[in-house]
Image 1 (cartoon, rainbow, N blue to C red):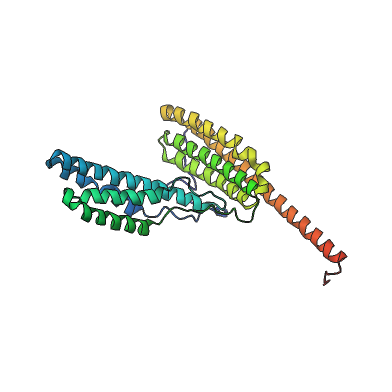
Image 2: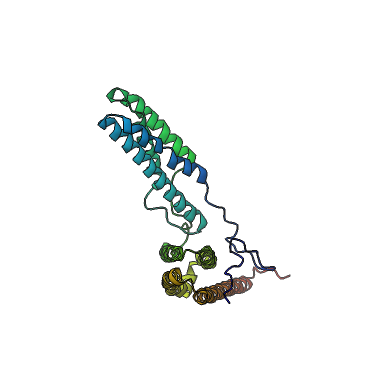
Length: 294
């Protein structure tokens, strides 16, 4: 008999007693959702208002609406990139300043929407400048500096940042593939696996020396998980087979256990390294006659 897929992270799931809270479980949801929705909806009336105007005025209104909608989308992507930047301890600044460009495009869209012929250009320009500035104050600007790379070996942090960028890409592809399964339980299960994987990411960020030991988990295993998710989603979307779902769930459970076991080993190794450093320092102080005995 088929068993309902569910668990702690299912829509109606409950936490298991005694379960450890994830270090990422307290992460805040994306901000500005309501304001983003408003920014997507506000330009729509321009499409209807432009229909009754002369061709040139209609083209201006349509261009204004398209510019404002594109600016809202660009802002949404910029906020996602900023959230990812804030969640990581070592991160590069975004290569493309999406939020800044969104503010500029919003100003241009407002100027086009408020322009009334050539005589209205000065007033429209003023509206656009004010709108762009207010947009920037409301949503902020993109991170302009790398994070977590000060005072640390640049080569090591660059290696970590590159490896984690690739790993995050594999997780994103995995989630996109899971969407094709068309099942909320599957999406929740993939989210739980991604949470476990990101806990390891944070461990590697805290000590870049762990990258070599964790490279297989950040590359080979995540690629395999992504490929398995692609094949599972395509098959499950067609068959809705309970055994296929159970096998996929078991695979992710095994991967989660492997990631968690590896993370524990990394932490034990880090503690051992710290103990060695402490002992070496104590021996040195003792030889120099500077160690105060209890």
